[in-house]
Length: 128
Image 1 (cartoon, rainbow, N blue to C red):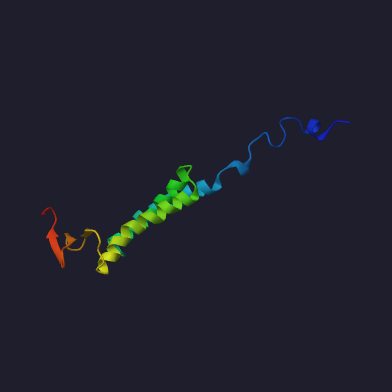
Image 2: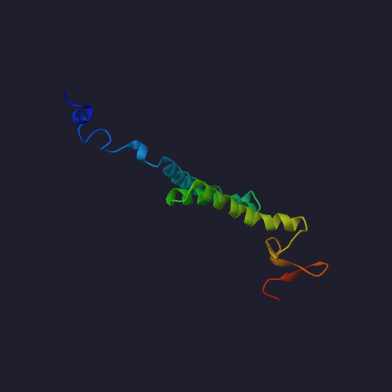
């Protein structure tokens, strides 16, 4: 009496294409990144949000595309996606609280605010 392995043969069910081998999360992240990118440019968030917030939200589709196109783990992609807006928005928030540790660009008056010895002085761009 033949065994199951002999009946199934070498080209059994595991020999062909398997849908479970497809990386659906990466494909979904790539498609989501493309859709979010199109929406980001179509909506033009700079009309509704401050510049630093609109720039920070741009990291979401970039992070999705990064995860979808690379072999990086989702944790690495998430660190990248969250780190960019935090790094972009934190200086602005700290500056609005008068806790500016570094010079930052103040976009409404086209000046660079620099922390002086005991007061906040404003210098025009390009001048030292």
